[in-house]
Amino acid sequence: MKIKPEHYAIIQKAISDALTSNPTVAIEYQAAGFTPMRLRWDMLWQSGVKVGDSVGMTCPPDMDPAKFVPLYDYANDDHIDTALRKACADAGCAFGAYKDLLGAPALTVTEGKQFTQRGFVATLERRDTESLQVSELTCFIDKQGMVFPTKAALALISNDTDHVCVRDIAGDAHDISVNDGIVFIDDMDSFAAKHSQYCVTTYDKVTAYDDEADEESVVDRVEEGRWENEPMTFDSIRSEARNHSYSEYNGDTLSSTDPSGTDEYYRHGTCRFHHMRIDSINGQPPTSDQIAALASALDMCIRPSAAMRDEASTQEPSKAPRLGM
Image (tube, rainbow, N blue to C red):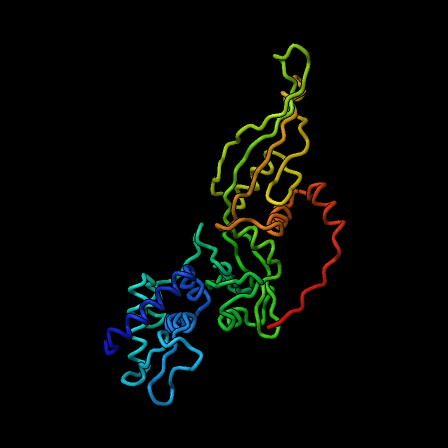
């Protein structure tokens, strides 16, 4: 390697820090069809390190000299790229260390690894109407619903969006559209809800008569459920929601509201309300919008709680955000 040790140390730290702050970037770049070379040069640029020389590409006056490396005094882009490949390898980023896409192993969509910091890894699928042959392409979908790689996706679509879809991890199909050469998933909220991984805690709130009291009294208690911070898929949540007749949600919890239909209700007047708290979605605390999307995707007429409806009715309507590129 032609790069001087003291200069490589700066590059190596820059790449390591950039990859540490973007732990899923390699998956995102590969799913989006970007090359390993683009990844490592982007990481160098994002790190704030600037490459130049001592003559015409000198350190800018407003830049920290410690982040300026005069590599072009003695090296070219090929030499620098070799150093960047080694830096990626040293940082544990195998994809960034490959020379090109041909050397990298195929990326597949697997349960528990279908989401990243910025979006989702999914499968774009096209079924030929004549041969019925299915063509598949691993793609990346950002949180706004844009499908990458756009060029490869457009080639797969071939102006026939009616027979092209995105498959979520549960196998459900989601339609796509093309707008100004950009591919979008039509029902992003539903797709995100079904293509995510959840950690949940279940519990019951019980209102019952205290049979041991001298006089009849009502006691309220909370009982532990079957799971505590347990990983679950969308399908598992849907099965649980049906079994316990969830009918309401608030900021982070799905719950039942009708205690009837059980033996303990008719024999003892015990009212049991089942709750499922969503502790995290894809490793992050859930937002109210994500909970609302989950409730809608479950397709069980699960409504927002009365408190949420009252809060929504008192809020002024917000202006629709403007779209930008």
